[in-house]
Length: 333
Image 1 (cartoon, helix red, strand yellow):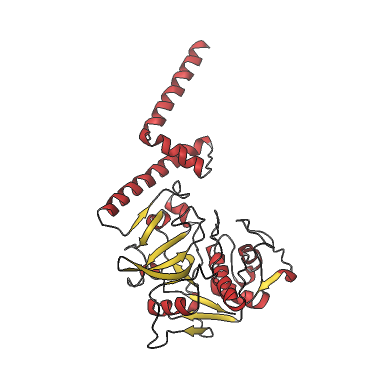
Image 2 (cartoon, rainbow, N blue to C red; image 1 turned 180 degrees about the horizontal axis):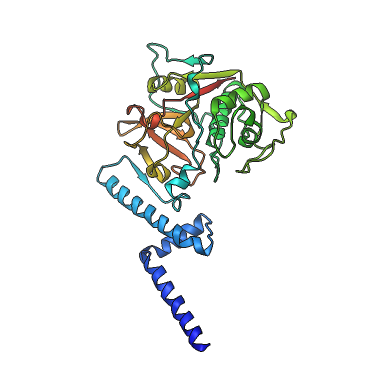
């Protein structure tokens, strides 16, 4: 019996040494601090795998930021809540159902008027058009956040009241138009659904980050819309005109890149981005220029610990990088 216990102790000791040798010991404190900050807890059989993924992300961050320091990149990256996720897992948070829904000719179009001189800088946030940065959590509901965000801006423009609208309402109650809650949805159909049924406030129908049964009370409706306007496809000129004259605009992008997942600051440009394979819905709330490089100001729905307090500056007038002008819309209110 003593021999068996001794062998068991030796085996545990050997396993611990092998396990520890799999990791970079210089990152031990960083790993502990990151887990604590993001409140990460794992099952024992999962922690080693998460540590491996996290170290891979750390190496990417170190390499990218070193290259940034010598001028290779226009943006920095950093460890955020996604640092322990594989790209396949990260993809689950994106919108699987973005199907270029702007092809219906019954929607009204938007095209920039000729000879219109636009301001060099636009930001609708200090003007009251934009609600706080929200967090979709571990749920592929970006389509709902982009829909509420663009409607919030237009409701404010018309009424002077900024009302945070309910993403959960859209997730639970708009399945009849083809939306799938945490598994993706459609922003145009969502706005047309709101046109027919209205929408509740976030306060009366709070977000849960999971699919649920529709519990809507029509007396809680706080907003509606009259229709949808489609911005000329692939035209950053028209998108800029819409952002400058209309307000925040719902846009789709290709976000399935580690560089975007771990984005921290600066002007995001990803040469591998697609301009037509789009998988994430966000909100363009302005544009500007930094060091003679133009950028879009984009509100994300991944909380304030991602990017620049929840925002990203995306490359503007760089051949529609990441497809930001491919599928842009806003509601008529």
